[in-house]
Amino acid sequence: MKKFEFSLQKVMEVRQTEEKVLQRVLADARHKLLEAREDLEALLHKLDQHLERKGKMHSVTMNSARYMLLQNYIQLLEENIDISRKRIVELEKEENEAREKLLEKSKQKKAIEKLRDNRFDEYRREMKKEEQVFLDEITAQNGNQKAMWK
Image 1 (cartoon, rainbow, N blue to C red):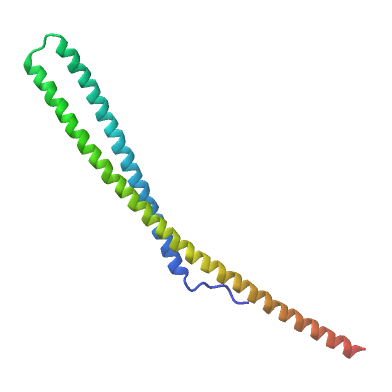
Image 2 (cartoon, rainbow, N blue to C red):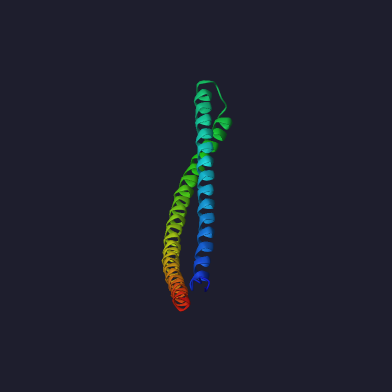
């Protein structure tokens, strides 16, 4: 019996490797997005703290230099929050692109795997057919030998 050989085996292996690479790319994109969201939350928390401090300082006598310093820091935090939000939008786009690429590559890989499975099923049917022909020949030969001995 001949061994099953899939002519597109190398192509399938390449697709599997590409899929694994894209899975890592997607995981990295998700990780970066998660970190960016955590950074934004930290910035928002700092802003809330400093706005609260500013409100308390306003009611208490405070020197204008300290007030200006706090106001400048709050403005810097707000700018960083805007930058962080823009970064999150970009990272979400990257994540979506990576997910779409992975989905497409998975479809390509599954198509080749299905083709391989279909060809393997065809191979098994052929092997069973050949085996049946072989068994039929043996049975016929045994029948002929029995007839000769009678």
